[in-house]
Length: 614
View 1: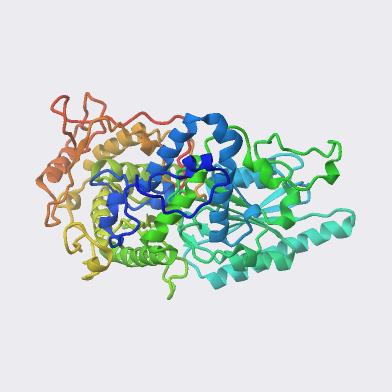
View 2: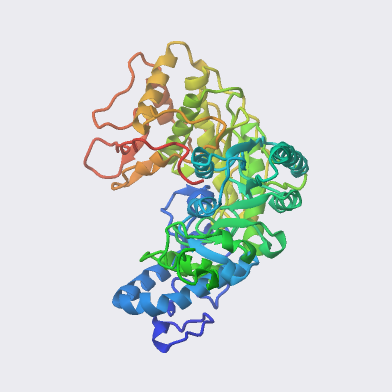
């Protein structure tokens, strides 16, 4: 075993076993490879899969996975020693490493399972009154919005108010509207106080640091400052901040509460999030979300003499798996070896900006963030899809979104998040250090073909003419598997231009089969709420490997197999299979047995298409 190079001095000799895991799968004394596809060796992604959706679930590097596995084995070797004595210093070390990244005191940050749990921990501890106002935005994440709605639906029934955000816009416009909006709410509350001076209503605002859908870096520090000036409590939902946003600086920003995740962008294992509560507000946190054995009741003897135990309550919520928290120092060490936070995010942001523009050029559309300095863009970009604009029903939005997601994963083995905002269809691309510019080309080819099918099926219109993408030679900067990245986005299918009224029912029959497979008969979700990746997409049975046939040849033209498939969809009889596979999907099993198709898994009944994290 190589000598451990981490700087950590245990309090007791026998506790070194828990932190002294093998360094694992990379030589910290060697120079790291360049960002791009060379970085794939450090991640467990399956060969051929293009992941432009790091923002939803993150990606755990192999060294972190190995550390977690080894630590888990050592825990099981002596559970009593670990849980009674050894886990506490490891947990403090993990909290200390996070506190340095966000600019806070170590005892102002605690770990929780995810950002939704952190939001719930805060709002369920606040003493609400009927006159209170809770402010969300129209782009608040679904689970956050539902949590706030639950509080508004519960006694004493505070009011839930929504601040409308529509993109594209500018930071300056958002800040001006935000101040005006809060002052309008304060004016309404002033009338309440004037009628009864004993009433003390408050305003509690929930702000995104980075909106999930559309991906947009918000001027949250300035919004928090406005809240402070107007006497409004602020909770910042920073789920996408840690590992993507530099110079967070909570000591200077001074939000009243702040939450983030460690798995999305920091490389930690899933099930790790951070709740920041400054010392000045810890008295408001009477209990952890799952009330701990360390809860202090006002009725306890000498309760008023006991100091606050915010950290202690969250330190032991019961016997849980702490490894997701304790791997964070290993994540930070790996990121330092890669070049540090600035180098990682400089590459990812640059690739997001250039890749988004390249994709928009291929589609003949535009990127959402057209500000001169790309002020809304960190490591995620939004690109308009070549689909008709205008109002679309909630049910149709869900059907189209599910159809695009399933097609991307099952036919092309590539993924980015499609979503509907401001009566337009967009795709959100999240960039990580293992991505390259050629990944955007592959996504562009897939979405070009899928959007043709969506237009012919859902909109009954011919495809838009494509505009040739501008030549670009950025592949050297962003890496490539096979030399220079291709700028081709595919050519128009000959069959698409000959669509007719006779072909529409068959195409709709195919889509109906797809959406039935995905469970699209669920009740529609309000269309003004952000659309995330459907949880049904994780249902695919991958016990047998697939050979995914792209409808494009190496030169970007439509392959004969794709033409044959398109021709079959124009026949009077819809395609059916006895295997239960989705009709029209060109998926070939590498196993010699079977009929050459693989069935997509059954839908998750009762789930919401907006329910998965994004």
